[in-house]
Structure formats: structure tokens, C-alpha cells
Image 1 (cartoon, rainbow, N blue to C red):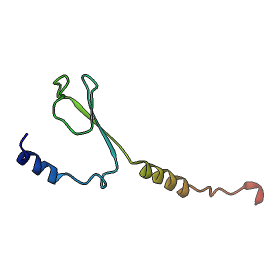
Image 2: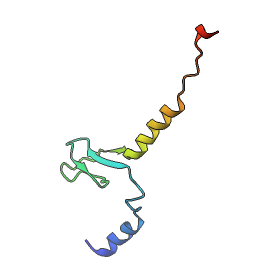
Image 3: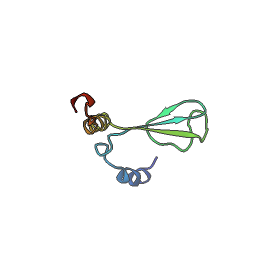
Length: 81
């Protein structure tokens, strides 16, 4: 493949460090998995490709922590009135 066809695509990509989310592309017909997005499965030629995006581990932990930190028990004990 000529370099002049690959260069524009390469230059338009975002740096991998900016996107910490894990992304998986999977053929819905044969189950083949790909790291890069594809329009057609090179294994079975199907065009139904599913894309799954998984948040980075540190983002998921931050969401869990903020949920537990913001939840406080404000009920009063009826026996202390």
C-alpha cells in the first residue's frame, strides 16, 4: 500500500494516550475481533461489525467513589426525640 494513502489517515488519528477507553470491534457473523475499525470482516466478508467501548479502569473507579461519597444517611433516630 502506498505511503501517500496511509499518511493522511495516520495524521488524523488521535494520540492513544488521549483515549484511554478500550474499544473492541467484533464481527457479528463469525465472532472475529479487531482492534481497528473495519467496514467488512476480512475473515467472512460480513459487513455487520459491532463496536464495544469499555471505560478506562480509573474512570470507573472515580464514578463508584463519587456515588458512595455523595450518598449519606440523613435519617434521624426516632428514639432520640
